[in-house]
Amino acid sequence: MIRFLFLLLLVAPTVQAQDTPVTTRTITLVEAVQIAQQQSTALRRAEIANLSREIAISDARNAYLPDVGASTSASQRYGRSFDQTTGQLNNETTESASVSASASYTIFDGGRRARVDQARVGLRAGQLGLERVEQDLVFQVATQFLNVISSREQVDVQQIALDQQLRLLDQVEGLIQGGVRPASEIYQQQAQVAQARLSVVNAQRTVQLAEANLIQLLQLDPFVDYRFAIPELPDLSDEALEIENYELRGLIETAYERRSDLEALEADIESAGLSESIARAGRLPRVSASASYGTSWTSASQQFIFNSAGLPLDVDGVPILGPGTGQTAARERTPFFDQLDQQRGGSIGISLSYSIFDANRTRNSVQRARVQAQTAQLNLEDQQQQIATQVRQSILDYRSAAAQVTFSRVQVEAAQQAFQAAEQRYAAGAGTLYDVQQAQTQLTNAQSNLVSAQYQFVFQEKLIDYYTGTIDVDRLSFD
Image (cartoon, rainbow, N blue to C red; front, side, top):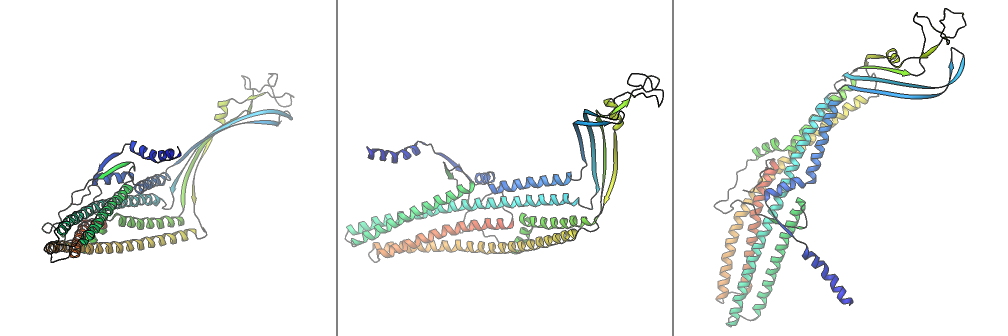
């Protein structure tokens, strides 16, 4: 019973995996680029950073708009108060309310409005950086696609070698049965067949790893079975092999014009210059204007009561004819709208401020901006040198790859002839099995080298486009 349960636990995951449907999807090179653009976190981070830069432009603009505000308040006060008319302390509750509006505007800030231009430059630098991120992504996809295709070609090479070894095994068996060759050679050839089978398995594993790397780069669903369609490749035969005569100076000039990361560094220099202008503004005065208007109401506000003749009345409603009568004037709460009219008022003003001494903060800010500008200039020069080196090396590697394709073809032809000659000598009894096996190994290596050289040549072409900034992020192809 325990053994049965143990076997059931081993089989259950396998059954569950078989019950899960596996979706197969074929992806072309263009689709892979589109998927990478949608899935790339680096691309999304760059896009989000540009959104922040757009907000920075809005903030810089809004800083020079009028600042308008309104406020209102209401309160209720409890306690004792002194009545100056009666000379008594009274317990009373007093309500009050107020409303006001104000506005301010900076007329001149010493040139700090350059912050708006600086924010625009920052956005332009971010957009240029985003373009280079897209080019990086497209180049990575192209490289991984070439690795997949090249690995598949290597599987074909190793499969051809296995077929040749199997054919040679049949030949050895026939010669042994005819008494021409010793029986020990069958074991030697079986070992070679086993090694050829292992080479096929290793080549297939390399394909799977290349596809896994491409799946990871594209951030695809790991539960889907993917097939990558082979794109159209250029004809690399001797007759069709076209080697571009790249001119170093022209490519470097193209790179200086097209590389977006270089333009981004130029924008950094411009931004640093604006930072110095902003810092210098600290030495100039600031002029601003302000205005306010408001009114208030309180329940403690009182007014005398008058009759129709304009005489004040006492608490009994008798007119007060003059001082010394001993009468106490009657009072009532001032009406709400009367108070609002009586208490209304406002102000308008203009102010000028100038810092006579700011503990050298402005001077240090200017110096920091200059250091920033110098650093940005050095970064630009370093990047120009790096780009020139990359372009120069890519041309040399391209020419070397083209020569490698030609040499590899010659090696394949020579290795094929050597293998055929070794087979013929072996069949005639004049050669050894070891000679045939060595010739076959050299042929397989030559064919493998030719595949590597061909795809290296295609890769070097795309590498030149990448280093010069001319790689097409929308219509990537290898033709």
